[in-house]
Amino acid sequence: MPMPQGRRWSRHGQTVILAFLILVNTPLLANDAPANIRTFNVTCPAASLLPIIDASYHACNNGYDDGSCDRFVDAYAKLLPTYDCQRPIDATPVKKFVVPAIWLAEEGAEEDYIRLLWRLASEERMYTKSFPDAVRKARLLFASKEFAHSLDGAVAEEWNEKHEQIARAVREEARNGMKAISPAKK
Image 1 (cartoon, helix red, strand yellow):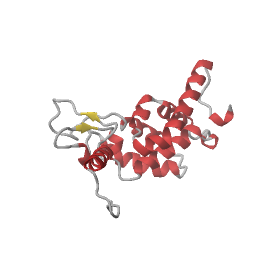
Image 2 (cartoon, rainbow, N blue to C red; image 1 turned 180 degrees about the vertical axis):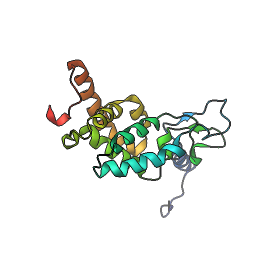
Image 3 (tube, helix red, strand yellow; image 1 turned 90 degrees about the vertical axis):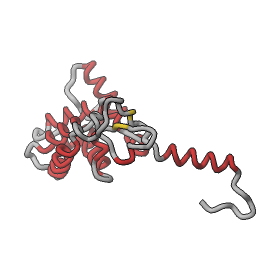
Image 4 (cartoon, rainbow, N blue to C red; image 1 turned 45 degrees about the vertical axis):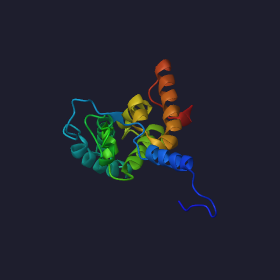
């Protein structure tokens, strides 16, 4: 950041900027790694499940009626726990963190996956006889606390309200003994 003309940055100003930069680069919703974990990504299923979720994402997103939407939702659900998953940024000299396995997806992929999960959970056009199980599972997953916990930063800002919308609809459906319905049908 350039220094303003004719002014010097105060020590307080430098401290505030440094604290902000540290905060921005610290995983906000990452959990402290349990003390007994010394090596990471051993039990983390990201290496085996990310290729499955990506292939099923592309097939489901293109409307293939081959079970890909069910595989997509099932893989997504298995990628939400933290296990011993860690990205390079989650290992600091002072602390070690573990994160949801889905966070190990390629840059931008998690947002694509969330977008398809949202479409499955919310759009009436997806309520065809081809995808009823995937739609039901997607609604329950999108409404889950595990899904909400996996949202972080700008992703959380974008998707928390939609998560709450689906969670309210699912709770109402459960109270009324109804099958999963689209919020648009209310």
